Image (cartoon, rainbow, N blue to C red; front, side, top):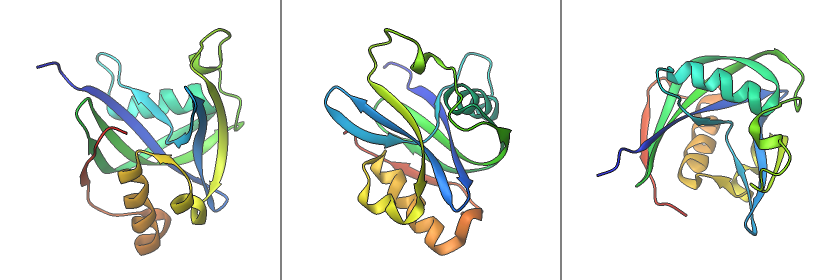
Amino acid sequence: MEKKRERARAIIFREGKFVSMYREKQGRIYYTFPGGGIEENESEEACVKREVFEEFGIIVEPIKKVYIYENKISIEHFYLAKWLSGEFGSGKGEEFQENQNNGIYIPKLIEISDIPKLPLMPPEVASTFYDDYIRNGKDLRNDVKFIYGEIK
């Protein structure tokens, strides 16, 4: 059996909103949490910092792990992260290189109240995140919640 791809993602609040990437790919429109694949010998926290800087041009500090999401092909570690500095939308990652043919990437600040209406992926994490925010505010939960999902 093939080893599952390990990813690390960030939940970042700014001015009462949260950071997300708007995507258009192969006819689908959706939003994602910042993050990506963990490189060899890289910690989850280091991955969060690197990916967020590459994608959004901002420097963050992972505060605590809040969710582990697993499906048939990957395991994703979600961290609440604090925005330290940087210019939002100035990312220079591979997503923004010419001829990537990976669709459209647009950094966005999303209203928390819009989460239930948006195609935020993965949906199992989106609904857990929204419920968690309603219950606990922007500090989110104090334990790690395991979420299993289907590939959409």
